[in-house]
Amino acid sequence: MGRIYGYSRVSTSEQDWALQLDALLKRGVDDRDIFKEKASGARRDREELRRVLDLLRPGDELVVWRLDRLARSQIHLLQIVEEVEGRGAKLVSVMDQIDTSTATGRMILGVLATLAEFERNLIRERSQAGVAVARQRGVKFGRPSKVTAAVVRQIMLASDAGTPVAETCRTLGISRSSYYMALRSAKAASIGELAVAA
Image (tube, rainbow, N blue to C red):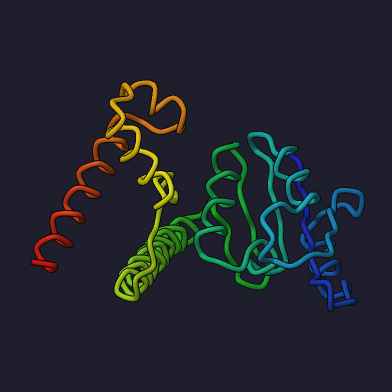
């Protein structure tokens, strides 16, 4: 039989630990093995949660009052449960009546994994939709180009003066591909201006 640990969390606006602590003590957790945390459930870098997870060994048990004390999102909750299971321990949620060592608990984990995957897909789809809308509005993604209008003028002057390409690239801090791309664009723009003028 392993050791039983408890984890209790209240948000920064809550003050009362009584319900949680009472439930953990009734479940058999020693008062000295209850890790108490005052932090938002959305935070992933919670110190007390990390401490108790690091202590878990095969056969141990981590008890919480409710699953929402561990995490706010399905994805984060599943990651925590997977870590507990990976350490050979089991997770028990008193109010949710979940024990990951039972068949019912494992079934609930399966549902949880499906919901987490659904949540991941929703986040990805929203992100892709947001990028598409931004692109339609002219927002450019990626690193800004080093080849500004001023750099293009210097490339044109250097080219007209017969300055070696390598020397121009070194001086301006650009690659050869950027040099030739800028040169082609500038020449195309010049031809276009001449055609309009004619």
